[in-house]
Length: 136
Image (tube, rainbow, N blue to C red; front, side):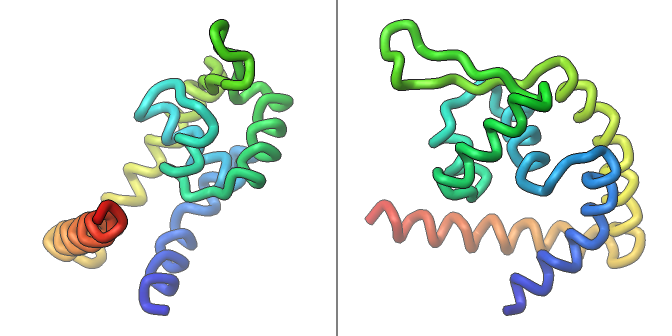
């Protein structure tokens, strides 16, 4: 419950920025992942963004119709698809990122940069420990 409350408090700060640009949280997570990682297959995006595969198919279809992503089939395996950002999405990242950075600076001002750093480290450690369990 504590992690869910923390997530919701954080999203209260950032959700208005995302929705002001006509995006859902899922769409923004996908755009961020593709911007940071480059083109990927839907299953890879699902893993990174923690979005189920059935939901991912619908979200990507909507994003493609909105001109936010393109999908291209692999030439050697027509069952596989590579998803890539459009120029419009790259422009959105640049635009939204400025406001997001300002929100992060305000957060650090409010709670202190050392608190933010400790939280990042603790969450990284938690995820690393949980991922080790999955691999064992």
